[in-house]
Length: 164
Image (cartoon, rainbow, N blue to C red):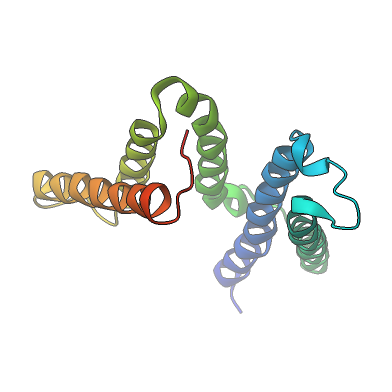
């Protein structure tokens, strides 16, 4: 294996546990701050059982994968180069934008927040902006509107989940 392949492997080895670890932190933050899920339901464990199980496995898995990445780095003479963390900015910004959605949603509503979120991330993740960028932008606007509209319809009308 050449050095470039080793660096690429380490990017994945660190990126995956960081991504899942961020989601675990967001999940723990959400359920620990909600007093209802911790209400005593008698013999029934209540709504907290499944999130606690999933977040426990997610947290343990992220820690194990991160430890593996550190061990691989130590086996490769402990080389920590800046290139390893270059691709981690997208998952970090994504997690931050998800956290930012909650307060924004209470101010401008679910529909507007979801449209901004979907449009923004489709722009960031679009493969290439060369060529006809106006057509690409139009397709992103249409895809955002259709996706958010479909999700809103399914949750609000079909399964009757109240949206903020």
